[in-house]
Image (cartoon, rainbow, N blue to C red; front, top):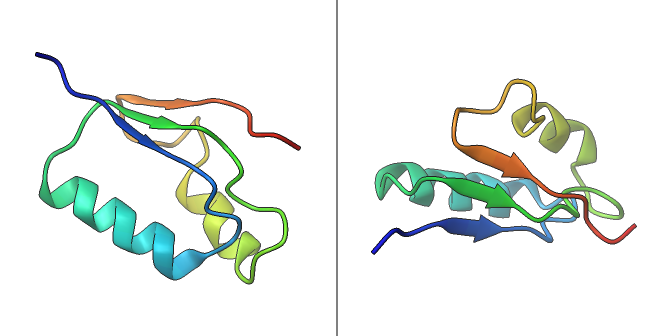
Length: 68
């Protein structure tokens, strides 16, 4: 059975994003689907955006728009 990885609603929480990405890397979880809402009202939006843009994300990532 194929497995997928789904995450989202980070809302600028850089420590949470780093923990989730590290866990996905350790478990070799692919493909990865980002459901959006990476920034908005959290503490670290400027640090999160460069880590997850679709054009430089690792192969196997799919970004979907969040609820803005």
